[in-house]
Image (cartoon, rainbow, N blue to C red; front, side, top):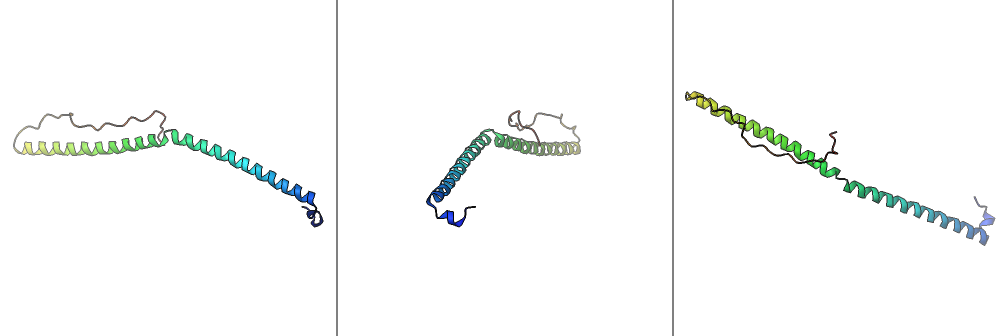
Length: 114
């Protein structure tokens, strides 16, 4: 704290102004350093491929669910065909495992399931 009579002194006033300028410059330099660090961290997060890997996992889960629905539909069709063939007195067709399979996406090895 500076007393009131010292505030009118030009040298004290100049010293106070210099201190304010020094603090301002230090704050600007700290702010600039933190901004550079934040930008570097942002760039590394954007380029690490995390989002692409998560989207690949999401796509693979969706494709797996779609494959389950395709398998269910295929099995239902086979069941109905066999039922109606049996109603006509014919033997059921030979079971074929030669039906459509949906391919999964390649996902990088660094992905770990949560």
